[in-house]
Structures are given as C-alpha cells and as structure tokens.
Length: 104
Image 1 (cartoon, rainbow, N blue to C red):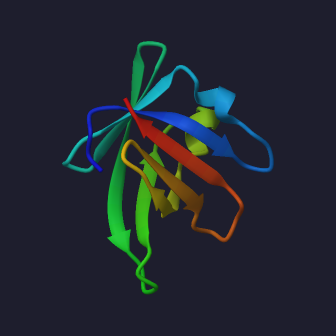
Image 2: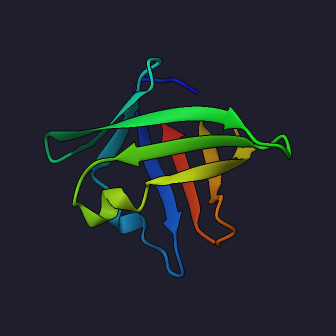
Image 3: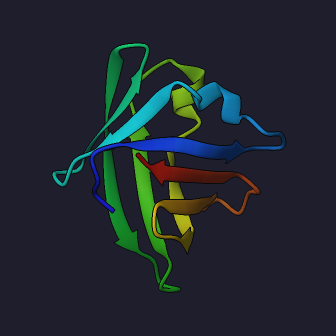
C-alpha cells in the first residue's frame, strides 16, 4: 500500500463529498506517518494497518486538525476492494461511508 502519493477518488457519507478532496493528496510513509497535502500545506497524521478478528484488513487514519474535510478521514477503514491503482474502504463503524483512493 505504501506509495508516494494518493488522491481521494471518491468519498461518500450520506451524499457525495468527493469535491471536498479534489485538490488534495495523501502521502503515506512506511513509518506510519501520513500527510494530507492541500493548497501547499501538509497536515501530518498517523496511519496503521491491522487485521481484525474476521480477517478484514483495516487502515486506521488519525489527523490532529480542525479542518472538517480532513477530520472525515479519521476512522478505522475496512478495505473492501483492491485494484491495480486504487483501494476502496468502508467505514468500519457499520456506516455507509465509502472512501476510495487512487495512486498518482
């Protein structure tokens, strides 16, 4: 999963909110640091990968910010689909939140 840069290809939470992420990128490092880059600014966060009791792959994202769009990403995301250049996640809290990132 660790590649230099990803874009938010789709974000849905009761409505399509993808437009909130059109100019941003997610930058993952192999050390567990993630950056949310928008308008020349990078907000640092943490990410981790775990496997739950049902053998689901989970990606946990945590950003310490007051930016409402970035806070939407603070969740333990369940990986639901893996493609050559994209990953799709569902909110692990039993919600219908969908999140897809695409490699740049």
